[in-house]
Length: 141
Length: 285
Image (cartoon, rainbow over all chains, first blue to last red; front, side):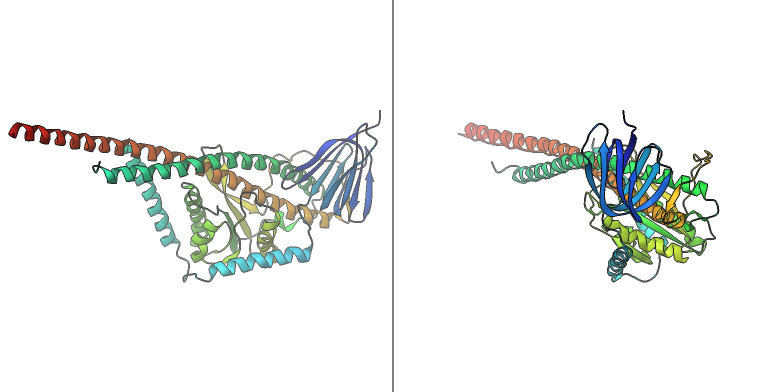
């Protein structure tokens, strides 16, 4: 029986693949990496591309697309932390700008300076109202 | 019969409200289950990434990533995660209360605060408290990580540039479907967990090099923490809404019963009066 290793492909949103395999090929940032069991420990970033795994006892490869991420190799465990979308510095930058703009728009009708005491008072009032409603409800029962 | 027409219309309208709240309760219940599944699905990623970071940090004591370094505080950031919609009981209010307590403590020390708001409710509440550096709203019931990257990056960039010295995450913790507790936790610098005490005698090979890999890892780790919190918040929102709508439905039921009693009495009184009028009329003849 061929030697096997465990492979997990996970993204922040879900688990993509998990299983026992004989071989893994992944698009490393510095070239494609082929991984067999007992590979030495390695961490690398991945480019967008195709990860191919050969499940135990099967002859065909399974193909999984990842849009980048990080690959961690232990002798018998391979973990791919996949990104959920395309990542690039300028792309991230654009998203950051968008988030800032969003905040600025929300701030347009902002009143003067910071007033924690007032906000707190309002909150306490709201909480008191809630309690009041609760009481009325109980009394009705 | 003319008697109690107003009461009958009132009962009718309360019944309609009850139908709506009942429907909302059921929708929230089913969405909650889905949100819980999503919550479970995000766990493996964060765990894996934490393991790798723990390991890399352990085997490279000479390179300290800025996210791991504690420095003197002159400005703090808060990432506040709220819901987009209301009708979910005191969920947001309780959270904001916790946030305000934490913020006031810093304010008293004359330390400025930057805010990063996720969700419409936080935006409307905190917008007059100033210093909002980023916000994201309308993430929907299935938030995607892409939509959060920008917001988180603004805060992390400020941290790396030294504008912020600490970042807190204010979120709701999903205890069970009846209980959600607000929680303020420190996001950056990352507080080391006590469990990685195991000594390692080996090191990874790095491609391209350890610093770059660790940078990428740290950023993704923080993102996954925030994303997890957002997903958890959806589950909290749904369960809070379910509970709120359930009590609203019960309430409507109580109201209807009371009104029904009043209505029956009024009807009975009207009938009695009519009979006595007829009897009195017959007696007079």
